[in-house]
Image (cartoon, rainbow, N blue to C red):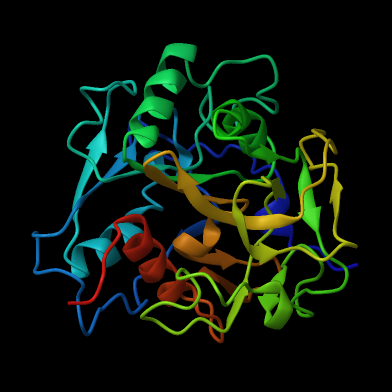
Length: 308
């Protein structure tokens, strides 16, 4: 079984001062050549709904700047973007249409191996977030492989969603070049009845890059895992615990909306330097897959955008 090593392993710390506030170098970096243009933007530039990114909870993709391609795409589609550096509250969330919670942890990534018995979010924050969504806010939340799955589960549970712990693999639907950790979604595993898939932008084929499995019977399963998919121990030693049937759930919660994904890499555009000297592209820059279109459709659905 050939593993997707760089995506599933616990990255070791390297002393490198590219960012004084986050002094580590990782084997992945943003693809400077990815096409993030939007030919027919949903909104005039800087005139769309406000998408707010959580930055308060040691969010790895924020700290490492791997969120930049997603931010650039949203700006090109006319959305306004801001970064929340306060705890979730009625006041701090009041201006946002969408809150993005991605790669949250109670500690800087790779400084510890497990988030069990550690609080990433206070109970008051989770109650405030739940109320905000119930009253019309839209939440985009991501689980991931361990220990991100442990950290996000208390938040997901507020919305009746559960993430498995460890790493999910699928020995039936996977990218043969990299093995069962790179899960493919097409045909019956891709819910073409949902606007995130069957939206303005064409989505026929996706691939995830490890991550966790979700379950949430109140939501539509838009990225369906095969019944024979299973959860394994992550290389940090965490898991396996639990099993889900999805890597993408979406639906209403009160007056608001939720989209939750078991893997966050599709919303990035990363390049990995592999051990054999080749490069691997993960996210909106993965050739042959429709992540860019999927991302655009996701935000259109979360912001209730409709054609005039």
